[in-house]
Length: 279
Image (tube, rainbow, N blue to C red; front, side):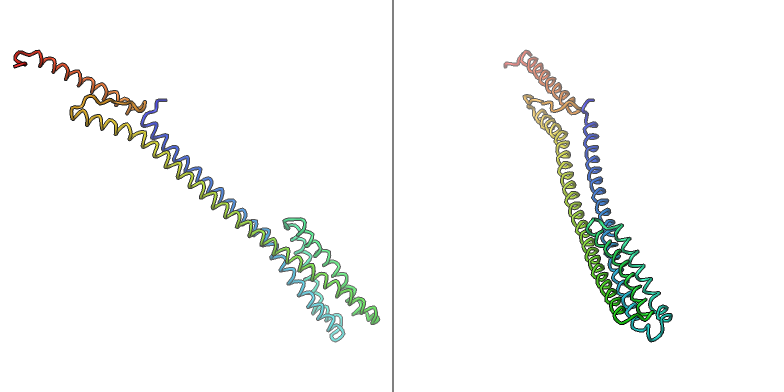
């Protein structure tokens, strides 16, 4: 295809549009990467941290209820004490297990899954130790048996508390990791978008300069030729810079200059040959 002015302009504008499309695509990619990281932070880090905090709250509430039961069971009776404390404590323990199972399913790595799995096991052991302590309190076991049951319960309660604290630390760590991922993705997106935008700007400037030079340089040359010819300088040479319409115009200028030189030569010849010219 002939490199006409129209084709050059079309190619130049197409190149600029292509650059704009590339920059837009990079920007959209960076935006979706950042959005994906933010969703991960909410889904994994934020949720895991929230679940760990909920486990701690339920654990503290369960232990408070059970402590109230063990304190008041002999005062208000086993049935009343169960209604006042144990039913709610059983709900809290069930919630601990459910939340820990959920945390295991969303934990991002094996280490964090292991910590929340310990809470699941700890909640089951805690429930068994509680059952033995309740039986000892309600059946009137000997002081030795009751003390052993209470000690086992205290030990399981302490272990569950430690496991819950480990889960809370794992939740905070997951949330912080997700936030760090967002920061890294955001910084990478900024640098990527900025770099591509700068590259696009430089390429756009280069393409615009090249296109302008390809058009203006031969036009300015033809302008100089026309001015020289108008001042009577016919020794000026006409250069053909391109194979487009401007190149064709340069050929026309060249033929025009040759024609003017020919007609001037003809006129000078006729003047020199006319009678009385040498007088």
